[in-house]
Figure (cartoon, helix red, strand yellow):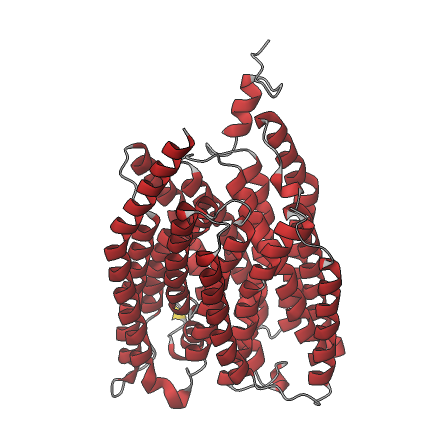
Length: 522
């Protein structure tokens, strides 16, 4: 008979739960697959959107120009990540993480259904579907990341490695999605490709309902911890009425735009959205920094979060060129004939998740081994490394774009894109999972969902900026590509240097402050 812990679980059972998934807590496995299929659903439509909207009406598309299509994509992708801010707040203060994730899953599935059926019922239903995916993702994204963070106690050196493994789930979904919808795109079967995403979301919803929920409850009970994801703090009243009012306003806007009463300029909306998001994020942190609710240590933690969020914005504004400028570059200016086989241009979108699947376990092991030896770099140093790697990737694209502008030059070699995407992937692995981990680790108590939402807001801004630049990749503007990629390279290098300069003094201030706080308590 095994020795029982204070929670009533045997030591063997506790060990199996705490190390049951590649050395990480067992519930990470079901959360891994929940996220994998949700990301499959998103990445099924992500590479199709711009190409579908610029395709001629005769080819089944909308016939939009590149600038309009990229701006609409930017608004969609930006709104999707921006929705994580109010979504995280609603999860913290109204629904609780568990219910928010459940309802978010259902709304996303409805969005995919609308997009698939828009082939029969018209363009308006297509955009309604995009809105549903945005609203549902706002609830889903922060919650599942917070749940992953809740599996690790404070000081657990496996946290960054766990988020890197979790990140693998995202990229398995992205890899499968790009390979499958690439085939449908080549055959002009746009809405079948969109419908595939809805099936992925349905699988995600079922895995969460019948596996993840049970595993999380069992883990919390065995570990003797309170299942925070089941509860909200209940500080605010009448939130449901505000949500209902917002949804009614959104329906009114859809009706006004679809009937032509309210004009809609996607490029202008994308530009102003960027300004508004930046202003909201800065205002939020300004209010928190002067709030008497938070002590000195909490404010230092917030300062690090703020710096990481700025760095994340600049990184994603370059990285998210993939569905816009990279996608169009692959489709129009890259030699797709490899050994007699015509490679679907969308398949280049599968290289990023493929590289992550190969490299993520290696990076996860490296972080854990460095941590065990006390040599792990700080979050800010990892961010800087990610940016330098991304800058190297854009340097390759400078040469790639110049190669097609040379007199008498033909199409660019696909190896330029392969090399660039490899370096961008290494940069992403050094930055994105670390950013998710840092938000759960640094956020003051009761603010985990909000801080995760603000991190996703940085990705929203990055998507909007990327779409603005990426929309200018067309035959008459191709000369501007080397300048675009050079600008991205300079911004990334400059930000990386700044982060490296700030990393040591800020982390020292945080450690000193936490030491003072512990002494004051003792």
